Length: 61
Figure 1 (cartoon, one colour):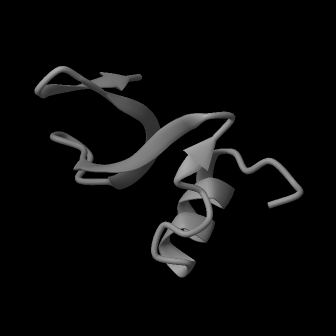
Figure 2 (cartoon, one colour):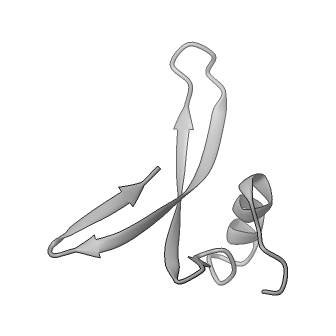
């Protein structure tokens, strides 16, 4: 992956490649968190960094 991906670009590439592209970012792993706004009902997907910490996972927002 030559060009860094950010925001919606990362989300789109992640989905298009089933995580093959967009899952790794500068040595960190990335997940997609999808939410629906409580008041607006708007659907949003945000890439977040995560990693294992013992038996748990840490998510960085």
